[in-house]
Amino acid sequence: MEEQLVGAIEKAIGELVAEFQGDPDRYFNERDMHWSLFHHLRRQDVFKSESASGLIRAEFPTRAVYEGRRPARGHYDLAVLDPDSLADPRVAGMKPWDEWAPYLEIVRVLVAVEVKAWSDRRKHEERVDWDVEKLTDPRNPVKHAYLLNFVQLDFERPPMRDFYQTLREYLAVQARRWPQLRVLCVPSDTGIQPDAGENWIPAQSVEE
Image (cartoon, rainbow, N blue to C red):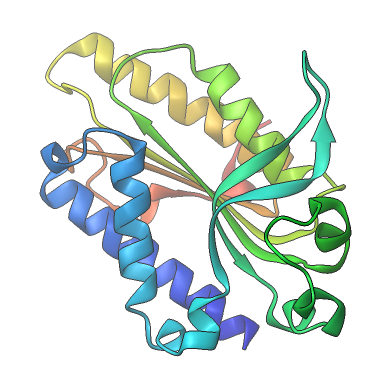
């Protein structure tokens, strides 16, 4: 079933990419993209049953707790839980108000997705690094991790094209550093990257 679930995720991502590039102005923020991705994922055959649709979770917490002014768990934009671990009898008796720690020690994350919408030239390192940390931290049992970047800029302006290239190069470094992380970088203007196959950044082709 794992192969089917992962295949459904990638198909839903492909549908979101086509939708974004076909009409980028319909997306005003990352939340819009979350909803579209959930919509496309829920329509996949493998998720049409009630039991399978229950595997899809929004803002699912990380197992790791991160230090800060107030130590707290991170959250994934979208997660698909491992069905075998979710079927553990110990999980069935847990309630939404129970503490997270015992639940997260049992339930494994099969797929975790982070979505980034880029509509300006805000500093990219911090935004990317936090998502990469959550997706690759060995304390978080994520089997298939996706970092999706949708870049919605006025590409007729050279500074915007330069920013896109800078962002893509930074993402390529992350793809090389974390080969288990699948990194997508999609411009709203298909003329910037005519070959759709280049939307996915292949780790093995990234130069040192």
